[in-house]
Length: 352
Image 1: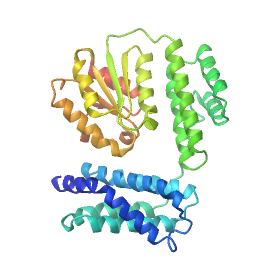
Image 2: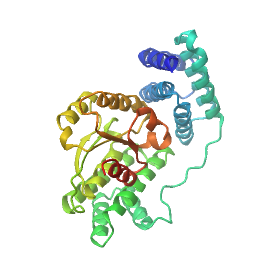
Image 3: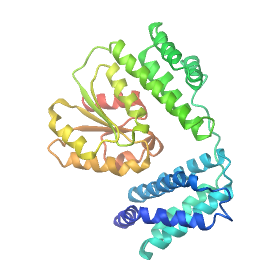
Image 4: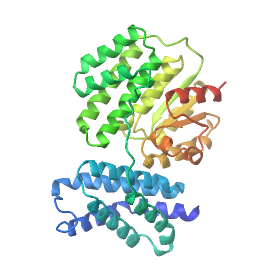
């Protein structure tokens, strides 16, 4: 464990130098392996390299190689859907490996190679077919399909009116959150991954869903209020806050008192808020979308456990935990929910 921690921290501390070296190597091979690479592509490539380094760091310090390999397969699916040839991805990964082995002290090479070799295997495997998140067997399938078509058609006002009208006609709020909004947002992410829609399309859909959620909380009364309070926070960027918003709102419509701290908030700010209001808080819900957020989540939980508010119940959720459930034990949370409904059930059991 100590060796993994030392290796992970070394990579994290030197990531900027590593990224610069990788980009230089790509430039040096532009006429052979990276034909078509242009200067304007640099910003996007740097972002991808930064994410690869972040995933490797998180995988190493948590000793979960699957975090790294699953991301490389996702990276491969994104590249292939954008007509980036396999040989170019392989050439990039060879540079990625050689630069890391050049920077990392020899004493850590054996451990590092275990992750890099598994990465080779992951990139060589065939990708599994991706199924739509809109299931014809879902009781809200027709509403999901119509809502998806409206947001993809950039018909925001019609999309909002459609969902609100469905509620007025008897569709439960739970069905809206767990079916219409959640499933469509998952499908939007899948469509972007496979280059079926643009980033602008994805952002438009997400903002539309947020507007609907705001309207629901303003216009529809929740179930009978209960004397329980949850604080919800995301350790990621604002682009990844949709999941924790769904959790927050789902608790609200089920009668909980809620506080939404948002995303991209500093750990000291969260800790200070929690400890200043601990007598009024029953549960803290933390969302993690990217594996690079795991270390921050673990650090926050450790600080809470070592503070005067150490009795607070903490639940976690989000894509990174759904993909790697074993990380729940790594961050030492009290519970885990794959979706808002599970989160509510787990939180309720913890404070019963």
